[in-house]
Length: 357
Ligand code: KG4
Ligand code: ZN
Image 1: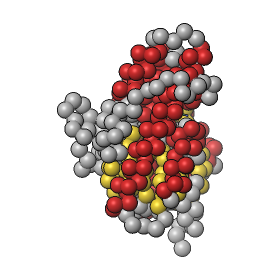
Image 2 (image 1 turned 120 degrees about the horizontal axis):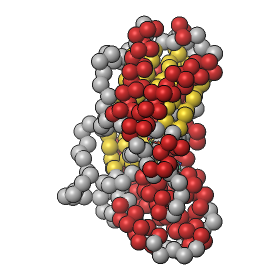
Image 3 (image 1 turned 90 degrees about the vertical axis):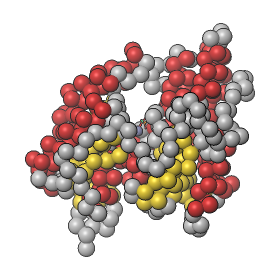
Image 4 (image 1 turned 45 degrees about the horizontal axis):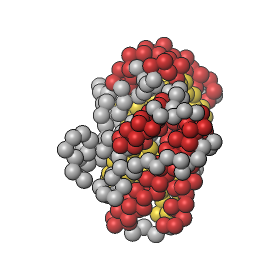
């Protein structure tokens, strides 16, 4: 019989200071014992985006407290922790360094293995915290910094099928929200604005909708929003623009997901096909509804993380730590922070001028 494993996860890659403790029991059942997330919205909102130095300073000030809270809430005795896992990238280097150093110090003092985790892999595996999930599966990762379709073939084994060539989807939500006068980060509130509006009021562009496979682009959409937002005269018109934006995003994802399904099927003839939608934007109810519909039509099973596990958290970091712990994939204490850490190292960069799709 397997023995019980307890992993302490740490996440500080951007503007959330998070610590979580998870446990896998003798029957391989995973339980979240604590999951503490402290967001820095109040610190950054007056700047309309995350200020790296302020974020890092806040991580330094809070990490002890958040770790203590997570340990107390879990009821775990530190001497029973099997390993420490910290996000090592991608993210803001000054922020990553805080959680990485804290994790290394803890692992050295407890004399347990240290494991560096790719933040994106945390999102990719996050539904596994609540449900069983078998490789391979198709993943749509939609967050504030990334928008990608990937074939997830195993732990650390990713093949990128498509990516944004400019803005990430969360970024498009946040920038649109800002133009509508909604406080940072505006994504969630934009969705509630959209509920009061007429989604057919404004016709918005769908960049590269008929080319580039399942690659995506949102920059042209943002420019259109910028132009229209300066002409709006009433609150109702703001609601209408929010609704039109939400509808356009859903339609873009419907088309691109269909293409991603075809790409995924080319390399996988597995009978039961699964489509995981993860990352902060996966909390969007309209997007969930649309993608569930696309899945039904194409015989894919949709899987979303629990809403509170869509955004950045340390339970997903502990989860990847657990998977790596089981195969003894540990790191040295000199593991550096990696601001850029793609899931598919072989995929070409498709950002910037001169991209040919
Ligand atoms: O995964 P996440 O917490 O952080 C990154 O790794 O980037 O994603 C944050 C992003 C933000 O852009 C936020 O506005 C967006 O997810 N977001 C949403 C919703 N909830 C969070 N966007 C649209 N609708 C939502 N309900
Ligand atoms: Zn994230």
